[in-house]
Length: 144
Image (cartoon, rainbow, N blue to C red; front, side, top):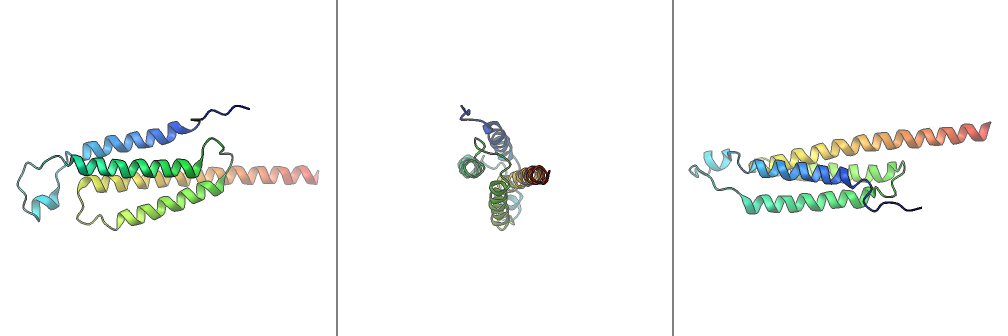
């Protein structure tokens, strides 16, 4: 049976694309820490290098989730969804620790990670329910 190589890739590309758009737009937001504490006068430069760095980090995160989930062979694999969820929670916690005086694009990256974590939680719940339904249907078939 031929399986398409890029099956399920649309989900990851969509999340990545939304993240790139949000990060690109966040570069135009006012950095209140830079203005209020560091006393850098307006207008502030667009933080292109920093945003490209965060887009690179986000790309690696999406690739990591793609490798863990492996949508090509995904079939009620609650274990893979759980591992991806734990990785996402760890990243949310790690990036959350540096948010205090960070520029807006860091906050938006963190919010993007929270939304990915929520999506992975939904995937985990659905996969677990499907696996339990399959297990119960097999058990009822054996008993009949």
